[in-house]
Length: 208
Image 1 (cartoon, rainbow, N blue to C red):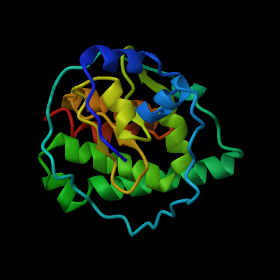
Image 2: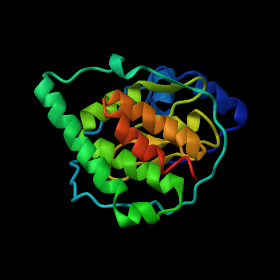
Image 3: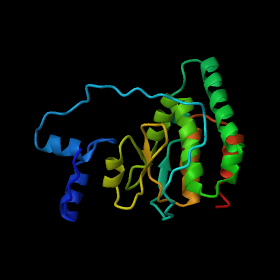
Image 4: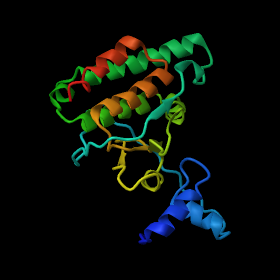
């Protein structure tokens, strides 16, 4: 992977050619130049360790963002059967509560660290439901979740994208604590998690 610098006018043109969420700058240029698409021949296997709290190294940069539109939780795709749904939801609730009740999480003062840690648990407990939830979240002028950093950078120069630990997802982090909670709330509602769990999580963001 090579890094090139482009001027602002060219950057805006490339960004304006995006046709789908997750399309990288390289994908866009290949399409515009009529190059064949490149797909990796090797699949990366994810190895998951037991649930632990992982803190990112960079500090949070708090900036306002454009208003977010969220689909109602009832619009999210449903699990095949009620039993499967109840079991999946129960597992997520258990993992999230274990995280937020942990000493490391409760002692952590940075909202961005807590934000990424909760997203990590949501994905690792149910990747399919997490993928559906993030697709239901969108901003007026930017993408909030993507599978590569370039997509988020193309949506804004100051998005501060970070990779959610142990996942293939990236998320913008230049939002204040309240906006981070709105993103978490939207994802958790789309994953059909109970309101009482969402309120437990909210307590860690309203005071930051």
